[in-house]
Length: 580
Image (cartoon, rainbow, N blue to C red; front, side, top):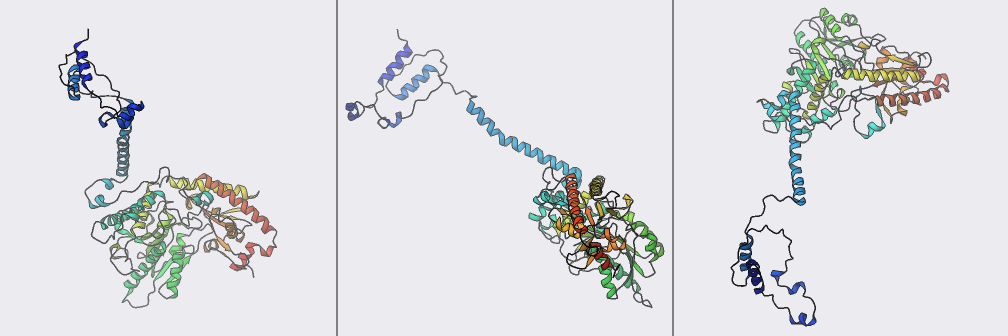
């Protein structure tokens, strides 16, 4: 016997009539097409999961409609909501992919928090506090991962083809410095003297950089004056001392001409300024000679000091030989002779290589140059002790507390400050790295060019390693013209020569420093100044030394075939007056 549920369902289904097919398709006997089916019935059959049936319920329905069938079926099988959690491969995959952005956002947030904590550890005022500078100073951008550590080669096509051994001429902009400068290249462009929102970050950045320079020098930030270059700082120092002397002597009976004492191995920014002002009868000056190691005698400096001496200026370290001058002793003895004398030192080459603390040196003024310590060119600073004079060379606005007119070069000043901070941070590590690179470079040159008795190579400068910069190697190669050697190697090795000799000309010049040291001419004409730095790596030393050795050997063979009178050192003898 048929159950009541099945009987009721069958009677309902039989009552539903299908619309008749067209007579043409019925006569032709062809199967009906999709268009012959009414729109309601065109939906394709769907496979569904049959619901669980509960106790059978008798269907009591009348009529032959879909609504009646649906109601009857619902009553027969029971009405259930769809399950809340249906796990299929599609839903699982969709869930995994939809979670990716959330995970990425979490990891990015974690990375940003770590960077913020690192900045807070290095500079507590950069992320906290209620002062204006902490609110407006931009956060530095971290350099690329793996770039910037001591001894790591900097990226760039030229670094892959040419070995850079000329750090005393200029340094590359260090990655950390470039990262600190970047916000001021794109976003923060305001004039620090303005009062609006665009000016505040720039004004705060200049103040921060002034503090960074002061920390490196061990002075107060108010004693730091930003300038455009080392030459300007040196000129400022001399002019300030001369103007103070003239002002103090004004009204006194007699003629007093200010007098300056310096050395024979100073930078041209000192020597040329003194010569120009002496020619204009503004001052007189004396240059103290150095010994064969390039060092000045403090007693000889003090001996030149008179009652009219207004300034003693002695560079801290020589850029050619690396000789470190006894500035503190010179200052002490000079003041014993004349207590009113001012002391200035050009520390362009020593900063970043040896400690430069103005109180230890006993100076009233000190020159710092940006592009010698990893900052860009076009920015420098002059330390001016509190109470020391400072004469204006530029007149105009009231920038630098009224001491130097001109809108501040915020971008480069930020770079100088970042470089000084880097110097202070790496002061215990970087000198050792540079010293190791320099010594290995010398060892390879002596091995390849020193000859059996070692006479083929001569180191110019102090014998005592503590009296020369850890990165500088002034080496004379016998039987070689350094200028011609570097001309051959200009695409392979970047270095400087201590002498210049132009082929085809009966003239040659040896640097004033080598002449003052009385370096033998056969070594002076072949002197190379090789200087390593923060990003010099062992491969640079190995490749650079090999290239110099090969080129020097080839040139020695060529020069040996020339008549003696045409050899490079005879040109030097004629130039310096050793022969007729």
